[in-house]
Image (tube, rainbow, N blue to C red; front, side, top):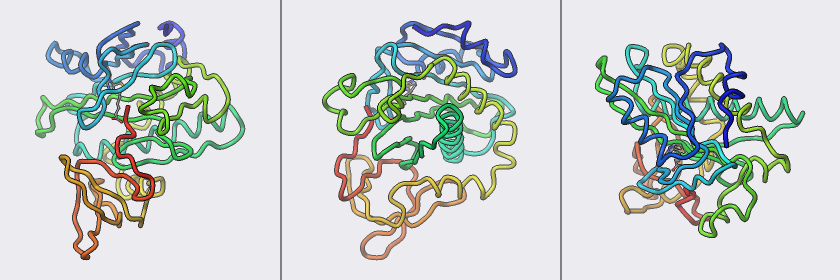
Length: 274
Ligand code: BTN
């Protein structure tokens, strides 16, 4: 179970969020989408120790067992919400990867490099550590909102993952041989998102895209692109200013893709999700 008081203790500033902590919930994203229509404020955050219907990208489910992970969502809304959803994707992925690396270095005195698999998977040691699911409405109006759902594998051991995802999944514990304090880590991730959001998207600019590109897996390599159950080979050649992926087909034609999945041609499986 997650201890709400311990989370609040570590928030800096002390209380900038409305924090809803659950022992069990179907999905923190589903919950916040509902809260939007009940007038929940900007920076409402929901976290559940266990989800019974955790949602992944591309209609997949997300394994969310108790005691081992961070399954949470953050609501952003109102005037502070500008930019486009792809850039938010890029920003959340980069901000979390940097926050995790900083945390690990501080706690262990050694680096744990976090890489990104397009669009927003967190990978460590060639396995998936976490994922994000962004849902919302971007019409440029005051009613805009964004639910940022984050799933991070923290204290699982190999056997805790279902056989289907075991070969592709990893937790911080598996990567570092240490048990992690979920409440403190969660507060650190939230604090970082809050702190960094003060300069996003206005000050993001090209440095955000290049920070993302630096961490991106399979750059300049052949991958298998899958969109709506159609797959085709292509080489990853760049990113647009909005954070869309630029790929080149074998016939030389360049395309920009905004959704879908990327798998390494050598590596195989697409669904590194849960
Ligand atoms: C992915 O497919 O990689 C995205 C996974 C996102 C999972 C998180 S867990 C917390 C939040 N609530 C959900 O139902 N999904 C997201």
